[in-house]
Image 1 (tube, rainbow, N blue to C red):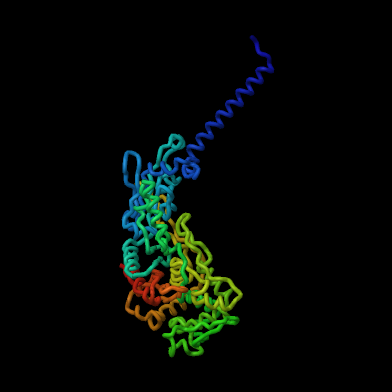
Image 2 (image 1 turned 90 degrees about the horizontal axis):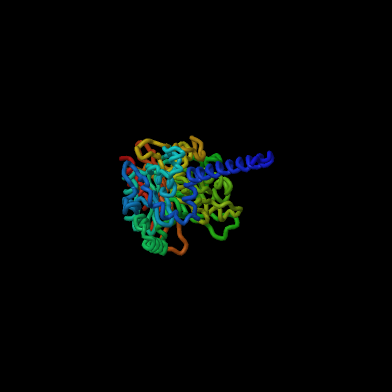
Length: 485
């Protein structure tokens, strides 16, 4: 039977449309399997996500050639993560559990499990067939010996909470990121859901929250270590280390109901005099000098601007999607509040990471480098896939101002509140003791740099216990000793 011309055209159009739809369907399937599989796998709507993630042999996290985290086969198709010296390196590695991941396990998740595009060696057909690429190696910036020394010193301090950070001032590489109390990632990385849940519940029930990294994730009043920022604002306003500045036994800010006094131990010392050189006020940590700077001259705006230049107010991303808490110096038109914050009390808060960044900028001619925890990403065969280059965050000081700050910090060790550190590896620094309302302990800070011969490391240490900031100084010296070997 012969078809009519109109019917021929209709069948032809139907065939063409069907063919186009088939091609589009195949293209979509290929795209989903080849390019969207990672996103679909990681989606919280995918019920198989948590089961499938343990079927991959994740690559290791390493430091100084030593594996900090790696995968261990437990049956025919599943792997479990293992961690070396778990509590020591927990702030670095984080954990990889049946529920979630943290730290570098989170930051480099796709690189470790082989789904990162930088590791792709298969063509489109291989991808569409689901062929897996082996997991890569994440090489951290951590100095293993210094990390262990820091953790041991923090635990031995008897502090409720404690943290230490060390940075390479030139590059921003994080060499130490230690925190106590800590936790063992091995306990929460079990594939037994009930055991993992129980481990998380035990940790979350502890009042000092060991899962939270104290070095970058928790905020503390920085005490007199913040005077380094306030002094930098004074230098920006035209002062020099030899400029005469206001001192005296007490200072009452305009509108304040209560005066700010120097420490009782300063009575009869340099801080009692009406005016002294800025370098002496800094070395002796005169509260009245720096409270006046925050309350009146150069004032809140100048100190806040200088704090922002060092990184205050920003959640610092030091690994992909891993960010610090945001340190803060309050903006206020109330001189009393600003005066208190300018000596590191009141509403001023900081992470140890942030205070290490302040020291690093002083050591690096005023340039603040963005802290980073990963040094390189390597393919399973050892080939470098990606290097992490140092990145500049800001300029907080001119080269001249940075040199002046170094001079003042060296005076703290030579003849000031940290003179007990003379002869150690610490060349310059600043002590800080922050009162905690209603508590029998203080937040005891020391920030500094060393070694003495060729200073390149910036360190911040916070220990929470009765006493004064100088008691954290020997821990900083131990860290610098370990880094310098």
